[in-house]
Length: 164
Image (cartoon, rainbow, N blue to C red; front, side, top):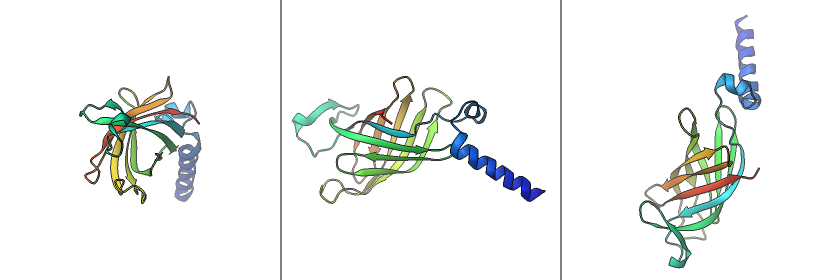
């Protein structure tokens, strides 16, 4: 009897967590976060020194000039897991941990990432960082800020729109 209950509970958990978590009314009953799965495209605004002054398109809150770069964000999500990959013009970052807060205010995705760097760009060494972006369900956009650790000491913005 106990084994049957554990087996049945495990089966129900996997079915809900992997496939039914984002379908109403199940999503309402279990308190699901918004489904951010898919591909998002837009721009990364970075304070890199790699570009000339004429490439600067804005100034961030810290007074750094920001250069606009194309970026693609790919999110794979289930009820209890989320993986984020950011593909930029020179390298790719992959999440090492992520969370979505959605109780108070707009849903916010925060994730830590590792970036292996790029052998062809000396200034783009391996580094880690954190990104915090807010989800707007009306415009299907994610916007927010990121920063990297002491190896790069880089700050910027990410603005993407869902395309898939």
